[in-house]
View 1 (cartoon, rainbow, N blue to C red):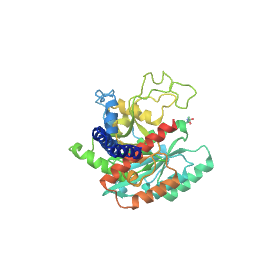
View 2: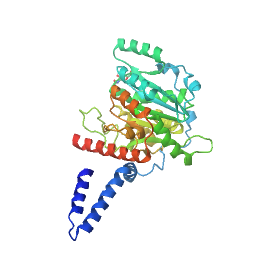
View 3: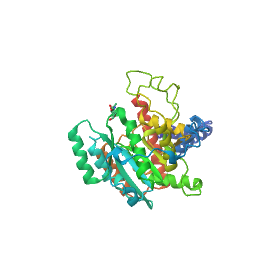
View 4: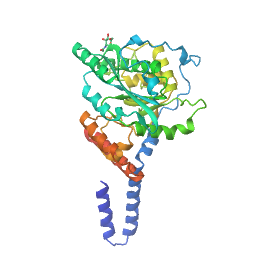
Length: 374
Ligand SMILES: *[C@@H]1O[C@H](CO)[C@@H](O)[C@H](O)[C@H]1NC(C)=O
């Protein structure tokens, strides 16, 4: 695309007619502008998204008197498998990443352990990655999970049937576990098991963002961070797997929410959101996990924050510098995860310009891929 434009410009330069001076100036201007647009594509995206956001959540529906302390405690017996209850006291993670995974996805879990999930210290901060599962329908699978938990000590199993329709219960169990057993973590990330997550890129983003926002007691402020979906209407088609009847949610659109593929909550946001989630009765059928988290955040008076470094839906074509910069990339097969990680994270860091250019190119390619996919 840029190549063709360049060629066009060159042709204009070639012809030395009277108007060619003006034309080539316009041409160069357009080229320069598109180049800048590619280099700063994430800033443009951030600006465009914030324009579309449904204002700030000014009046929390939750009475302000309800403090996080009044939260119903989550009990250890809610979890069939879990690492030692002292795992966070020992590891003292700054960031805990909870990977929601289906019992059968053993390969995906292993790829994560062998790549980003295996990291224990990033940018001088402790990180910890655990996996969240439910009860598999197949008892043999249940036994395999016990063996896997014994071997790796990184599985948390909630007391609910593991199924697509129960993903919201998995998130509730995850929030409850972190609330109860990991008060050390300043931030919790929820990540799907087909996501190439990049704790270093997240911590870099948080370092830059949080410094001016740090509160007196050292706790980070409310943060609900990810790829924000704007003005999503509920699915009113009864045969859809995301069917949402009007009685369950009467509104025309959901509050803006972060894509469920990967999002991050600060500890205070986790406590408020979790309180809001447990205080409201669960609708039937259960809304999609990310919509549910968005609704709970809205109830708690927490607005989502958009970060262009979270990929959300469309697959992002591989680029070394792009993958070094992105916080999360969705739709990555286990074998690719190992390959991409080895290439992007064992090589030297990319230059500022290299990162900008690669990020621009892979975002444009992802966008084109989505458009063609339609
Ligand atoms: C969700 O889990 C509950 C508790 O285990 C179970 O009764 C229910 O059938 C499950 N729902 C779906 C849609 O799988």
